[in-house]
Length: 117
Image 1 (spheres, helix red, strand yellow):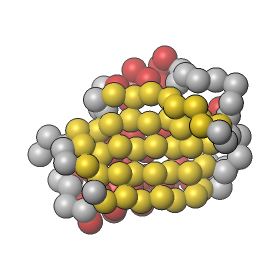
Image 2 (cartoon, helix red, strand yellow):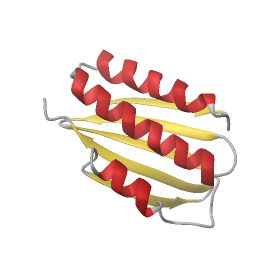
Image 3 (cartoon, one colour):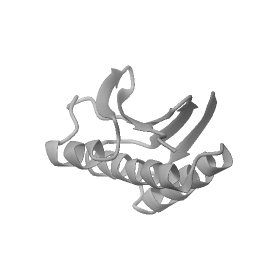
Image 4 (cartoon, one colour):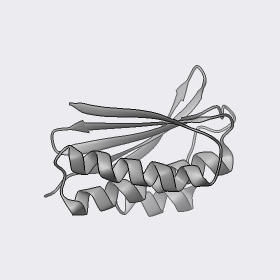
């Protein structure tokens, strides 16, 4: 299992940085360009959600497991345990599953992206 953890500042440029790092990372791990596209898209959506609704710095975690890649973005938001319906529908078109886990420091939004290549 491969993994990446990256702390990002609460700045709009973090979306672009996170997308680029995610894409380069999963390609380096041997993923297909199509899977890298899907992971890059999901990362952009989850980081944007955390920038719009969360608080504090963002922590991006990507884990490669056989056949799937888990994308997680943690932020300090503790007031909501859900992802807005519109964003959830958008990501669900690419990811197999999406959800939110409460943590001691806030929440973690996660999505599982299958590698069908």
